[in-house]
Length: 219
Length: 301
Figure (cartoon, each protein chain N blue to C red):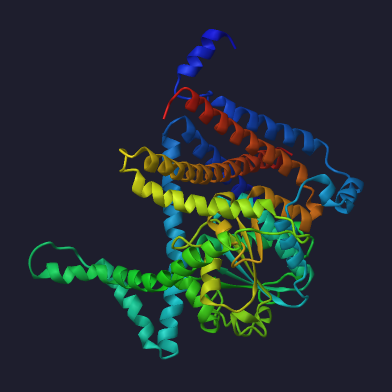
């Protein structure tokens, strides 16, 4: 192992231990590690954006005679306009929202058909068509069939729940709505479970790295 | 545990003390390192492990087998595009699988183009390439930037970036990450449009504007290119609805990722540790489930 590798590994080891010390409460070292992370992340993101987005765009605009590429860069400078709430400057300073509005409009224009197609049309079609699936020998394939049925029941009952939660007077409507609530809670639980497992994998991975580093440094 | 302590525990806000969550995992991992670092596998064991059919050792789902099969079908000397959309937070989960895939592709002389839609993805793609060189026995001279792989840079703008890559690829891929002409690179020979790639991969730990990047890419470019996704455990629910529509291969979650890695690169001999990690995770999930059940029985909302 060379010196650079050793220094990198020792720094990684120390910083990981300092971050884990946050589990026992915020302390001075944890706050230093926290600030380091934020500072380095911001610096890294800025460097990536400058060198891989802004400079190449600027070069393309000037070298390849495409001046319209400068418009987004110039628009981005509007973000630095000073904010004034009174006087004539107030109207001008509203231009600070122009770049965000531009991005929002473009994103909306792209995402509306995308969401409609991906989420509504294709996803529902893939989940419920065909409603009954068959094996090659002609028998019903129960796993896919039950999946399709559950998809229909969950969508209908969740939509029903959105209406029925205000109808506490009618027991039938309310009870059917509770089925929707069950599906909703199950889906939230699943997402939580997946997120938890992922964070644990991250924790185990870091722990794995610490022990590996200690073994490397001591051997 | 005596009755008094049990009663006290049931009255507390948590079903189990915190140490029950952390301590067994720590013990399992420490045991794994002490035990396996002393007993390093000998050459014969590794050879047997490589030759043994994976089906006999553990259950592998059909989707994983299908994904591995279509990856093995990629023709030699072709080109693939890999979207690396994860940062350090997902390195432990995704990097071994990406390194294994890079090794497999490099051995078949398949050129790789990387694109990252998150800034940290740039670093992740180079780290995985380095890992592939180190562990995959490819050799530094046999896997070179410009010749075997290239990085086309950071695609900024979430779904706007997907649109750009899908519809204006020749313009997007004009220059690489280091601002040199991508057209002159051997790794980008005969690549003018996105449809010139044999397959598109995505290694992801996040969605963009609420949708997986590869779904947006498929929507904006309907060319029938095979697509395979590798994603972290927390993002699996975001991909599941689309796996039968837009994706040809889907490998999601720690278990599938480790199985993929062991299947495509069995010589790394990490299946034992993977199994231990998986059991640790199952233990935690059982603990969370029992804890929730205990809270439910006690009538806590």
